[in-house]
Image 1 (tube, rainbow, N blue to C red):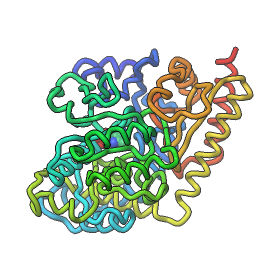
Image 2: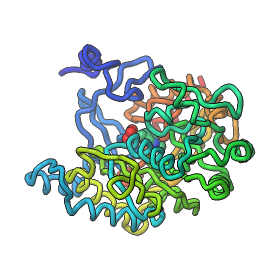
Image 3: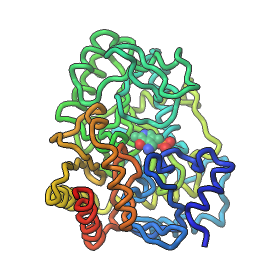
Image 4: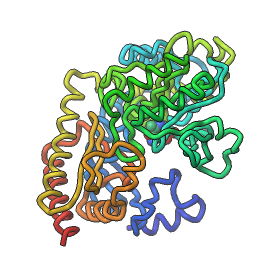
Amino acid sequence: MTTSAELFEQACRHIPGGVNSPVRAFKGMDRPPLFMERAQGAYLFDVEGKRYIDYVGSWGPMITGHADPEVLGAVRERLDAGLSFGTPTAIETTMADLICEIIPSIEMVRMVNSGTEATMSAVRLARGYTGRDKIVKFEGNYHGHTDSLLVKAGSGALTHGEPSSPGIPVSLAEHTITLPYNDIDALDACFAEIGDEIAGLIVEPVAGNMNCIPPKPGFLEALRERCDQYASVLIFDEVMTGFRVALGGAQAHYAVTPDLTCLGKIVGGGMPVGAFGGKQAIMAQISPLGPVYQAGTLSGNPLAMAAGVTLLGKVREPGFHEALAARVATLCDGLEQRAADAGIELITQRAGGMFGVFFTGQSRVENFAQATACDAAQFCRFFVAMLDHGVYLAPSPFEAGFMSSAHGDEDIRQTLDAAAGVFAGMAS
Ligand code: PMP
């Protein structure tokens, strides 16, 4: 039997860091990443045959569990007709109609191949539509690896952004302003100074890339008001929250309507899919209707559409999200209780089908500074020990966790039993 450690060594020969996306590498975890062989329902099975209760769900798409038979069946059914035609197909219209019905702020939608493509295209569209260059984003929000959004705050509150990575021109990054999340005063100061230069503001309406941080009451509303006041385009990046926080995404959950929405993950049912859409007047600027160029050889791929349409059909079942949120609440409350029993400082935060675990004495975590003030080393100990107990959490203290409808009471019970043992070990 080939072990994960052996496969990782082989992978490192020709794949940078042995992985095709950095967070998979178990950085800081003091062990090589696990190589998975297959997955079913709430479980991952590694190449050594060990089973894990999975709280990553391929980073979000697997909201009805892995290898959902209906999703697989839909893909299988289309397979023999061919993989890609480079022409319109009817199922793309089915997908567009479905998205527009579920998320009414989306009047027109364009399919792409990843969340990164969706945000990149939405930013270009906001710039093209307004004729302005500046983009506002928030510290600790991640919108994929497009140049304009891989930008961190400069040294002062209102300075121009600095590239988060080599390879991004400073001359591009300086058009991106990064503000603290959940801070309405900083938002107001920014718009008061340069509001009429701002093409668009992009936000994770529940932040899921600095652990899980819901918006404070009034924060999303303030974004809407400022964007209205200065005619800037409000973009909700719902790649993670779409169809997860609620059927209609965070915008339905918090009743704040953006101009544009970016989607990914669930919308593709596990296939490489993203989408962006919104107000008809803005979307009409996209080529070939309008002058803002955007395209994709594989966009709207029929197999990917079949997977996504089928999964969206399943999450529309009445009561789906209520049941999912109840499961997340049971898990989170249970973790807090087990940690308290062991004398470990831990809080959880959640929104619908996503959650976060913070090792901290703070009562709430509301922004990047507070998230990074949590005990990352303790999280890493927790992660590794839970793995040994057959529970697969996101391998980073700055990622949200995801549950699926396939997680049953017994899975939650086993997870909490494992956590109780791990907390006791950490406390001793
Ligand atoms: N936006 C958000 C909120 C995300 O969480 C992610 C990925 N986790 C992306 C965009 C980028 O999506 P992708 O990895 O499909 O490019």
